[in-house]
Length: 596
Image 1 (tube, one colour):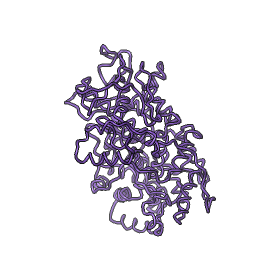
Image 2 (image 1 turned 90 degrees about the horizontal axis):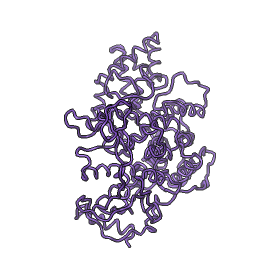
Image 3 (image 1 turned 90 degrees about the vertical axis):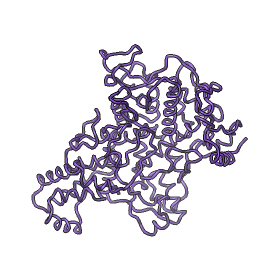
């Protein structure tokens, strides 16, 4: 038997000299040994550590943060000013700047409750899942005007995600519905939009040829396992995984689920033009979902990934390492999608809750507990606060009943979240990366929040929920950016410029780049010019003298009044420039783009 460390070193050495399609020996994994790795151990609750200053703790996970700080001889930052906290909460929970008429007497707890009940909550949080699910409305390869592989009604899945999050559908049910809604609710077609999770995946030309379908199955396995389990199972398509206890047979056990699942253009109307297999002829008439294959079959292990070299057949089933060394086999009479969903959300599965809690934590705190968001395997990073992650994951499942809103409420009400982002020099020198969470991380708004904030400031945002997509860089479009058209063939230039992920693949998380082209966009693009003019027109209509105008534009853009040191330069600038130019200068500032 190879130990985990020995197998890792052997595989790494071989990978330098031998093609990665090599099958590494035929020795079985020592699952008892491999199962000792931290992420394969079931999470458990942890008692709060002893603290010097327990009064700082507001939520259980605060204690684990403070314990590490005290061990390092450090203290957390103080609580952020209420105005900044309100702005932080508004962007984090609904993706929009705060309403200016906010009641000054409203408590933070009540404000959080209001935001969680807003219909805009689902719009903000849907984007996180759509990145994970590599949501898109077409394919990377389209020949001429052939639109047969496009998804004109992909928005139905997006709308389902928004609605499910607004209704606080528990995360375990959220996953069940997306994998098997047609099996769980066979007579409730309205629920079948959830199947867009797989039904909107990449499709390739020459479909139904084995080589082509094998690539599609790999996409499904990769998206699901990295997105939900934080494991790179698709690496085992051609060989046993070099670093994690995932044999090739496990890959084909999962791929078999999708080999028995057909992508299906379900008619949206009774009078649609139909094929002979029950699908619509025109994508415009279809809801893009999946269904069971007409005949069930197991896949063989294709040796070295070669479809012309089939080996032993593998029954459809789950990962062996997550079954204590025994692969759970799925119902052979079905594709296995419903069984797979149940295996993912089983209370004893050590990964699903941890991975989701880590994603949500990263969204709210600006930095994950496990920095490799979609890799909890050997090559991934270990958690900075393992007890915190485990305790919060267990409480999410047991106390929160898998509720996203419970999880968000738990994090944002904490002392850890409500710290200021002040970069105290002494603390910065001791922990420059803020690994110990002694302050809140400053975060740059993603492109959707930034664009939405522009429209809120000008008073032109259309807040209607749901519906078809629009072009992101269209200066006349005024709907929320969650509804932008997402293309695998050619991503909108505005989205690409501001770090929107490639929708051809599962996205672990957003990158953040700073380029000259971004500033040129802010200065020159018709969208920015138009919004600067609209904001200026709004200020002129609402205010009298220049003092009032400067106050008002600071309220609109920054949710505060200008400092004396900012007011004088504004007067000087406006002696030589018009108000739209001044507005555009403020729109290009860091404060409009960043969240403290």
